[in-house]
Length: 250
Image (tube, rainbow, N blue to C red):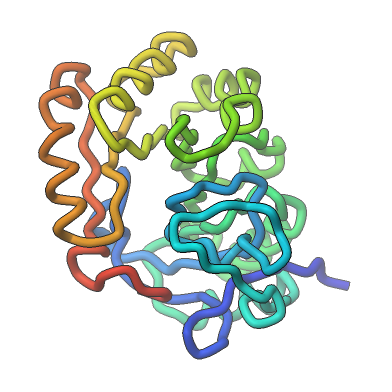
């Protein structure tokens, strides 16, 4: 029997599996097929996918003040069925995102294997918050990780969000890129401290402005550029926000 995955739903109530362009990080602007999973072990106050974790009755705070019903926002599919739906969409690569995908690591191994039964060269990328250590099985199957450690402004305690052993592991993986959400220059400096502490080369560090509107991203991004350049990091825009706004499935 195939393992079960918990997926987010799009605005039509369907599994959030879609083809679009990558809006952030190393592959920005490139076409990808996305699968968004439900559930997260962290709870960022500005999270733009709070419908994957901020359930009614939970104590977690969010700037929107909105809570979600898990039955309306989550759908369960087998790993094999999820792979079949991904194969049905033309794809230059698959991005596994969330929520926090590593909460469902074992089922993802099965999903990836089912995908690659039909195309051994299917490119697999994973977006993760960097607080959960990936298994060897996943490391062997993921082409690259985009790791987004959460800083203090996320509202998560550092003990939960910044796990030294996990960050050391990603530092050793040449296919792991760290993408820090920044609200101001102090966050860029914190990213620099983390990079130095764990020996992560500057070219593998991306700084992305927090924001869910095009105007907000531009304004905040402009205030970060000098610090990004000074540290030799790469600036990541939020291209999908400029193109589509804050919407699901795009």
